[in-house]
Image (cartoon, rainbow, N blue to C red; front, side, top):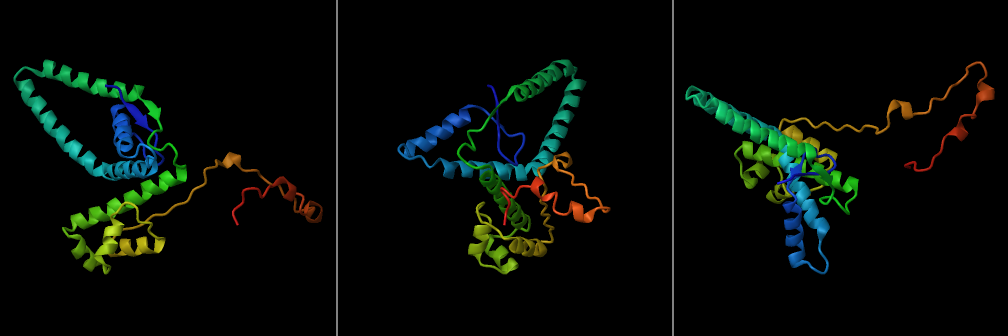
Length: 224
């Protein structure tokens, strides 16, 4: 079966089989034929994919252990003089997946109708929510126990883990402080250095040059 690459802002290397889109449309349109709430279900799917991406590191560790086990089994098979046959099968499976990924066509059905900033917000909030829930589970606490530990209500913990709660920077810093974590917030420009216009200024003729550079700039689109 062929694969398709899902184009989702902030998420890379997400693939699915085409049947997923058909099942998604069928599930949504079954109950909401006249006015399908696409955005609601799209956001839910994006949240789930974001959580999976958040758990990628842990998943990679699991995959590493599985591969180690598989390699051990391969070595044992080699001793039984079946290495060539089993190796050929493994290489065939591996190359088949790689080839499907290479040929996968990009699709946007998951995010159609949603703005890029909306998608990014959905992804980031889901990741933060999943990280907090992961911390609670690693501490072996219920939501009620975690709420007492954090000094908030159980209802607030439930909101934190809802994948939709809009945290403030202050609340995130407070949570990180309590959980011995560090929050890194970085805002970068999308423009490359060569995109900026260089303004030359002559100190020899300050009065003559005064305000001559102003017409070269436009305030259109500026944020007040």
